[in-house]
Image (cartoon, rainbow, N blue to C red; front, side):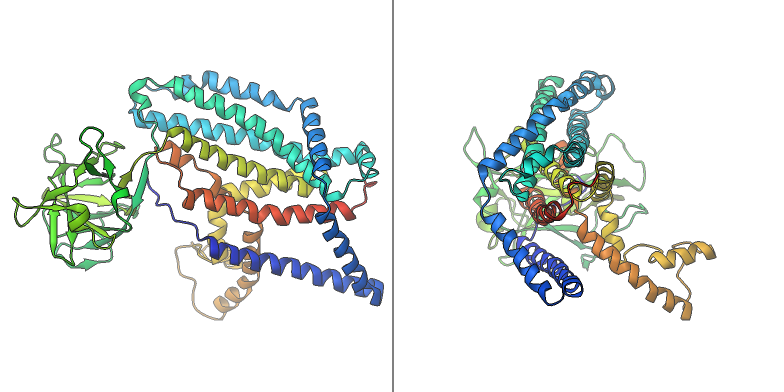
Length: 539
């Protein structure tokens, strides 16, 4: 694993969302007010308030029966268009996928990772285009065929039409998603033998904060750099005072696991350290490391026996530690990890490399405490839930766009927003923050014209000041665009499931739920107003 899940701050998210939505709708209200004042005079504000009052009444007097009727009608229309033929494509893919995925020489954990990644990615890539095309072409086709004219003559409100369409297309996608997910899970179970199937796990990790001591035993900002261009990991030298220190919080009895045979509590610690050899040495002899548990307040230090670091083998570096470990100063004495070494819920673990001349590399997520595992089926279901939420957002966005423009334009716009949100959200965030090598848009154009590479500092002077000043204008536009385009990377939970980890609620599901609710509510409101005030006769 090369990532560390970060819990989502729901309160800050709600405050930011409320401010952005309030500013956006407030600006839209002022714009409409000015336009009505210019076109209708003094009666403009009265018209605006009246229309807003009617809109509020529409939302308060919605009929669930009419919405359900429109939902069923939408579902039946999709059935007539033979949308579920997508299942044939899915079946063909999993029938022949084993020819290209199976590798008898591959480690079980890598084989499981490949199969699980393929399955979740296939489901996502198949379901999204189907619901986007259906949702973008539904209302425009009804308007072109004049079938919507029959509906609006009935006692049906425009918001009920919008919600009926959204729920109908969502129901179509949900049925297809559930069928593919169940077939995919059964295919995964049948693809592995019993030993390999043991790698289908859902580990629950507890991560800590990482700090460093250098070779002299003094505090350092990071470990040694061994020349690797990827600076994700830092290294500690063997047989020196260099240490990597993890501080874990909220450690209690729930952090331990009960041995099914003895009934004793045990602490499961897993690592994914990297080894850098400064000389070849004996390749049969692995690099040795050791864990030391430190309670600085009570000056108690306990250590476990050295172990050999096994590289590139997930789950191979799991140490099952008894609750009592030897005292480093007096081996005949023992310390209880929970009673003696945990101080107010905090546990400090020092890692040292014992092999002289060699280096041990590590990053914050490379050491964690394993809580009792969840079922793989539950973790798989959470990943499917993430795909469903992304599908629901695609449906709402597509229906919203189809209320404004025709099918082809709505399809292109929805596809562009989804692709940017799924694949380029990280780059867009960096671009909005100005954290891109080479400067902003105007500076990039100047660099291309002058043949100046991004790694060369822009020359000081008036020209630089002018370019930086002009770059602030597109920078504002990019920052606004970042808020308009959802970050769909939160919905992709494949890495958790494929690497044998449980999908965490606070770091994965919660931000996905918040993103779904935060974007779909304004989209639904905009879709309602767009359909209410558009001319249905236009083609």
